[in-house]
Amino acid sequence: MILTVLLLAAVQPAAPSVENEVVENEIVVIGRRLNSISAMVGKDQKGRFTCSLDKSSGNINLDKRLCKTTVRCIRDGAADDGAIKSCVDAEKPKLMAKLRRELQRSQP
Image (tube, rainbow, N blue to C red):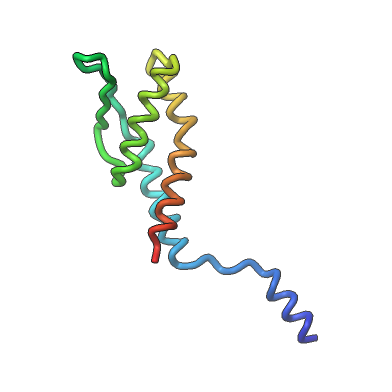
């Protein structure tokens, strides 16, 4: 009987930690913000791409990655707004996954 209880306890998934819950809540909030951000890309006098965002996601590293992703989409051939948006939207899950890993590592 005791062995059965121990075996059942071993296969039960652990309750999510408070830290994981905090990270997931932060991810949801930042993800909502991310979906409302517009990136403006141009070129400077030397032909280098420039990027600015109309607002911040609340995470500077994510903001930088969003600009890099937008520029990469344009370099890869996305020419009109719809193509650029589709390209960036396809990359957003990867951006959020990286942010999730960073936030989890930063938890005490």
